[in-house]
Image (cartoon, one colour):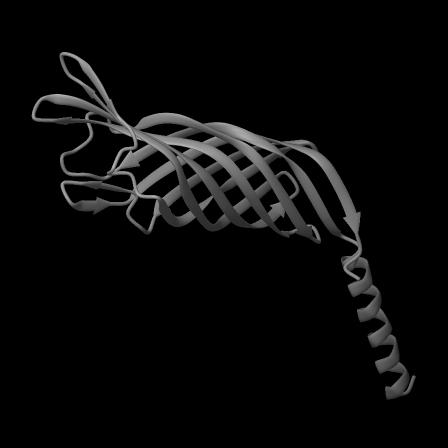
Length: 204
């Protein structure tokens, strides 16, 4: 077999392999929701180390081949913290539109590693003074309208339609201001996702 024929066979094999992988492009759309634990590093320190809340929303996942993908979501999320200033208990509550973007690597079909970034857009906020008489201040001037950060975690697939999502989110910008000092927040999320619609297309 001469060199020209060998090159032609190799080229045909490469194009065939690329076309086969191109048929593996998949798009999934669904809903997700779960619990969120917010840890806000502040001075004065929070009364409790974690404030439990929740989130829920929709997502879209684009997968290429069997190993790579990207997932973009839009969630309604609640965050907050408990404080004590001059022996007066304070409770800060915020609601956000949370937009996560996660790049996914799947060494196994049932397991994925995730890394990416997120942004939070403030919807509402309230500060509750829980002294002798409860006083609610809304909006809370300490809650910043926008914050962002990075995230990493794992995803476990239970069949084609259900997955468990675990993420740690670390703030790179301030999310709250106390006495003129800004502080970032970090939070963990544990949730379930449900793939409702799945489509497969070629890359071309």
